Length: 271
Image 1 (tube, rainbow, N blue to C red):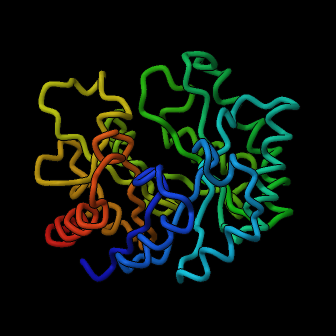
Image 2: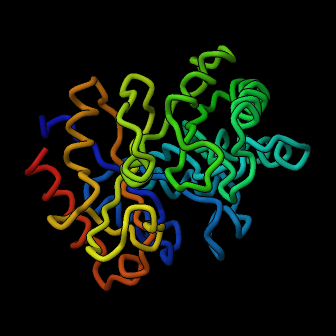
């Protein structure tokens, strides 16, 4: 089964690296797929670097940009969101990215039954045209936090089907958020990307886990990344496993290449 594992790096593994250094890190690890972000200060995309420059830097290092992470509050559709979506979709197309990650509202609003389903369908209907016209896939990422307006992959999958969006949209299976949501179904056939990170702090309860707890996957992992990956593969998933740790402990590693190589080897040895 290990031969099916294809790893990717989200720029969140080393957010302090400039794009050229990040792509070089991928090359040194033998990783050919990356996720770039639009929320890293002093870095592409926020610093205004043209898409063509980033595309060329990636190509020089033998890397392909699989996604931009992310259109935030995607399920709160308004004129501002539409403008953001168009700008990011244009950038994704021009940088050669295959997809744009779509992150839901995560502040406790928009959670009411009926309201949240309606909001998702409204947004997906609009995004289907914006993304489809540019040849960019939308990756819907439910978040497991109790305050999130879209926690359930089942609800997301139903909304995608209802708007006729199967040609444009897929789900993100994030191992951290899947564990927090407590939803047993994994939808491997609807999954377009998997985000992996671990939590090994024994003192934090599941309901209190937050992004800063998210480290590289190791033997102390409490999220059962190995079990989740095994289940996804058994269900037919053959796509990317993208490292997305948010812990400052990971961001400040002196040798991220060695730490990532160790985590990759750990996962390969157990899946």
